[in-house]
Length: 430
Image 1 (tube, rainbow, N blue to C red):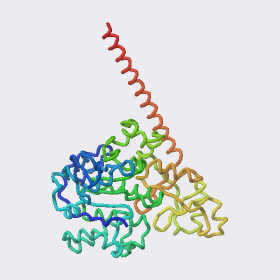
Image 2: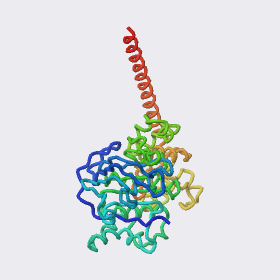
Image 3: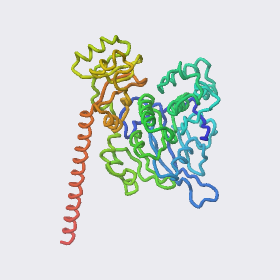
């Protein structure tokens, strides 16, 4: 069973934020700076500390990912921030406040916490789970009710459909969304996430990652995220802290810098092969051309759908359901073979991407589609447009060309440095 997490409470007034180191400008941050100073954890009977003298600063509104091998201390470091694990020594500062010695329960009510398998209370409804800490901190009933509705909408769940369900009635992905909603319910400046998407299937995990990216663009919290998956770290992080044993920092930098200039062989091992292709995780669908595509809805008369197919410049249209979500791809011959029934016509849409999906996500979806395109959707799955293979391949070529130019420039710099050292040695001999 996962730990039952403490959940957040009403935050202190956040300080004016600095922009995140690696991410785009996204408006004012509602997060707070986190400063770890010499943070250490020793367990009795252990020869070496589990975490040894970690010092770092995480900017307000920044999403920082801890990544490292199993047992390196990344989760222990995370849990010391909200003091689920008490540090042996060192200081923790959030905003202008030293929280090292404050009441631990009060501290945890000011920090959101999301874990693997969501950690929802099974005997409480979704609404009761989300409302827990706002109620404990004295919010009025009307304010709590409004906040529950707002949080469910924020994470893409229909309040009318989900507020009265119990966790057992939700899919794994829905449980994780509710877990994030609960962690954010009392508007904390800091959110800690300990491998929150590790227990769901790969497709759901991609969608949850996209959802977190979207939320962070809207909310600008300070988020510390633990994962063992370097691709996930690249996709999510403004900066990544690559940790060795005992949480010693091997490199703490923007994803681009780690991919193009790893600090040493240890970091290179995490980057692995295909660094140029991994950079596809740094570009979002919203940054490339999303084109429109002919659409019809299930509510339109069959003859009008047939006329749209027959008169259009495309040999297919995208059929949307009553909520304008992608449902089927319809070709010209489908309706005639289906004998006038949409139920038997067309090919179901098996995959979509959001605007916050990475180019890697989009490329994988396009490669599995015979027609070489994928529908792009909004927060509630509504149709926005289509991204196609040509657009994605142009972006890939641009990334590869940039890497080649960077490699040539780097080689020139090395040659100039060698020439300079040779000149200096010759002058010294003279």
